[in-house]
Length: 189
Image (cartoon, rainbow, N blue to C red):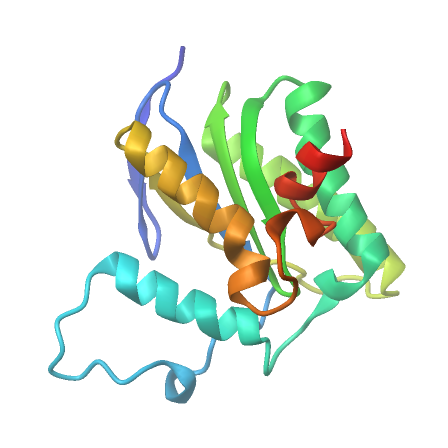
């Protein structure tokens, strides 16, 4: 196996061997503006609460790029995720959802996580930019958010969070109704 215990860019990244990883990446320019974030001055919040607050803002998709709403682009993201697991064996894919401006994935890596995200984001960005007739422009935000799963209960909580995301965002009534998710794929297979 491989070992990449820790590295840091703007965020810390921990990748213990043989652990599932929850990864979120966003479109370039989709991060909420500071005035859109909930006021936390003087309030102690956990990293998880801050993540959920920012994710709720992204779900409302009030500003920034919404390229993943394009069915052709959403389909290529889903295809890349599935191919990375089934065809290339880079990871076991447990859950995913493609939203208007971000992607959530739960996977167990078989290669270094940086290799997975670089490959997924690179392939998807090139193809999506071609569809959008954009060349030489960034598609994804540089850095992804990731969280390694500590135990089985957390694994199921994260999988539920991912597949429930379109319901929480008010886009569908049931997770399996969102075409760009693992919940939909489970029902359609």
